[in-house]
Image (cartoon, rainbow, N blue to C red; front, top):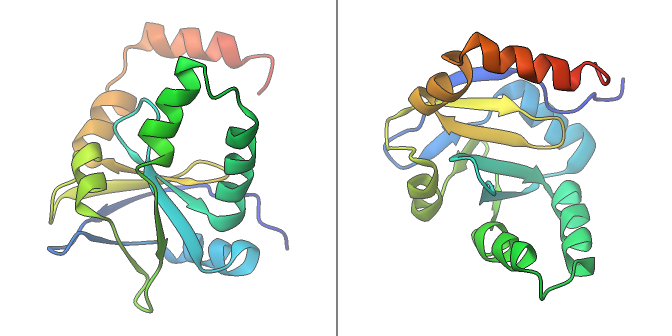
Length: 154
């Protein structure tokens, strides 16, 4: 059966060395569809981390190489996202070591509560309190606006 991508959300905790357990369902997708190499980087705007499978990262880098390097938005993306990326692998215990600079960028503390959320072609890693503030404690009128915007697609 072919994977539909990364879906689901897990409440976890970073350990005292900055490692996070990648849930088994996500590890299975990496193993069956992508392989062991992954890339961890910060997001463009959100205060979270993105975990890309090797193939998805390579596809993104192919697009970036075709973008006009003189544009300020492209420079920003390269300097923020590309330059912060680390190539990593999930260890035999299913853990991923998140480099200190990236933990700092995303506000993830050692032994802190986190959310790992599937985002179709990648995973997002959030500080749990920030996730709740940004996505669970959101005003109904804002959600109604999103619902209207998305109506043509879903």
